[in-house]
Image (tube, rainbow, N blue to C red; front, side):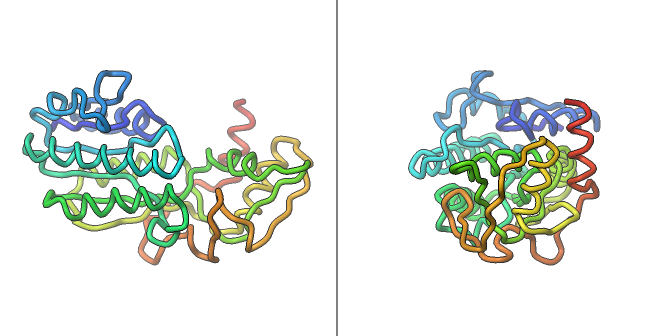
Length: 251
């Protein structure tokens, strides 16, 4: 089968493409750097000619509210139109656990808009919502730095390794369309501040952590379970400390 991966040179796309190719499929890694831009439509239709499946793992270069909404709405509309014209039989999108529970976040609102466009497209589809990636914990810590302290939420999260997101996405891609939403997460739910604390300790960073239920997540307030999956999610095996130790040793 021919599979087109939109955002194919990014963090997840660059991991997903070789997994699909190793299973015997023709994979095209589509990205603006390769002349294929879903947001503008440039090169999109020719890329989808003969495609059986399209997977959208693209991400906005800007998280500003209007910019990110434009990115996901325009890109998804263009992709749906091109997929219909090409006769694509399965459209897959990577989204985020909690998308429908954090509409105070402009980014999450944009992802929810993307999901709804796909759901109402008339195409056979699967949406895979993933929790936050291990690789993002350092960025969460940096975002919360103020006056020598790290301010971070004490609400729960259940992150996972990006390689295992790609694995789950490959299985979804090669499966039958769910015409619905599935979830994937890591094996451990704990306060966000706990994951950040472990990250900082591994870096030798002794900054004081200021944790609280009312500390926002990138500007958006969290409830206890906003960022953790519902029952029935696929749980991947790698634990945060096991990955973190390996990442530090190989750094």
